[in-house]
Image (cartoon, rainbow, N blue to C red; front, top):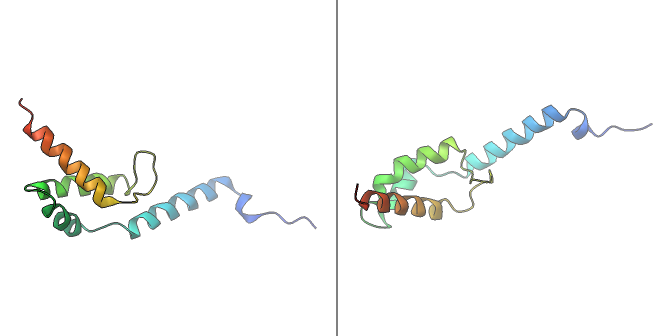
Length: 93
């Protein structure tokens, strides 16, 4: 008797399960807004001003990078985000 691998039985269901699993795995390791704010407050003066915007952007992207991979280091990403925002704020209009 030939066994059918249950993972290949329905590709649509498998894709959905994989997507949900990835989103929940990523979310479990995500910081709170307070964590982000506290971290950025220690980086440079005014960095915590950007915590809410960074947190919102990461929530919308399910804490994934541009290649849709889970973030490995949210602190580095938050620091870079706040730094870019600060540089843009300093640019003359």
